[in-house]
Image (tube, rainbow, N blue to C red; front, side, top):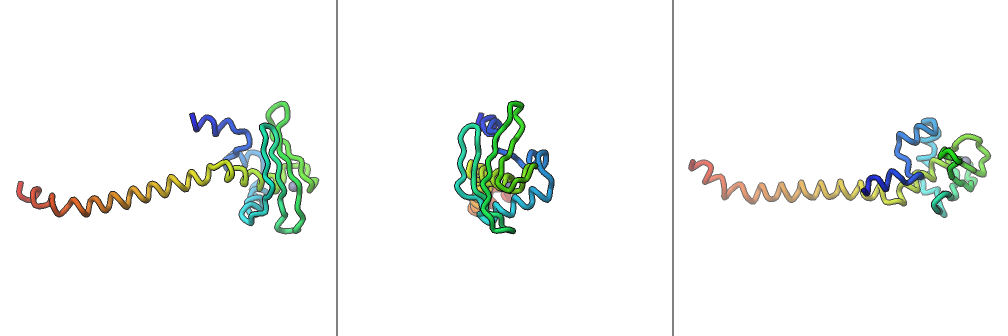
Length: 138
Ligand SMILES: [Zn+2]
C-alpha cells in the first residue's frame, strides 16, 4: 500500500522517469544544482510544484513551476525561458524526492541492515565457544 501511494505521487520521479523527460546532460546539471542546495522555497500542492533554483553557473535565481496538462504530461514553467524541461525543473524534482522522505528511508534501510549484520556477528561470536564443545563431542 505504501509502495502504491509513492507511485501515485505524480511529482515523485525515479531516475528512469527522469530519463524519459530529459536528456542526460540536463539531468546531470539538475542534480548538481540540487547537490549544491540551490533549491529553496520548495512548495507543493496537489497539482503544482514550485521552487526557486539558484543556477550554479549563472548565479541567477530562477523561479520554477511544475504541473501537468490534461493528459498527465509534465509541464514546466521556468523563468529561464527554456522551452523544454530545464535542469532547474530536474533540480526541483530531486529536491522534492528528498523532501518526500524517499531518500532518508532508503538510507535508514541500509543502516538497519548494517546494524543487523553487526549484531548477528556479535551473536555468532558469543554462541560459538559454548556450542563448539558439544559439536565436537558428537
Ligand atoms: Zn529553468
